[in-house]
Image 1 (cartoon, one colour):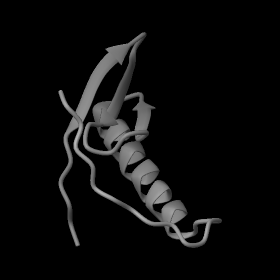
Image 2: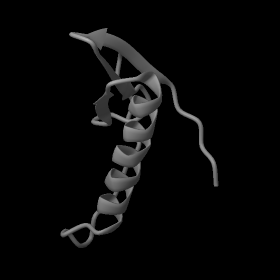
Image 3: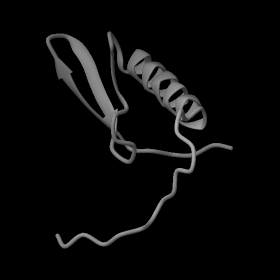
Length: 68
């Protein structure tokens, strides 16, 4: 399944640095925009695999509202 995310990126001292806006914690960098995109995809994949292997049992979720 292919999902689309928003890559926010900028240049910092010659490196392309970026993050996926919709997925907190997915940051990476690359010497080119193409390398940044490859690295971001790899980070996302690794994080999703790690989430599947949780050391905790009985985890529950609940949707809550936050005043903004």
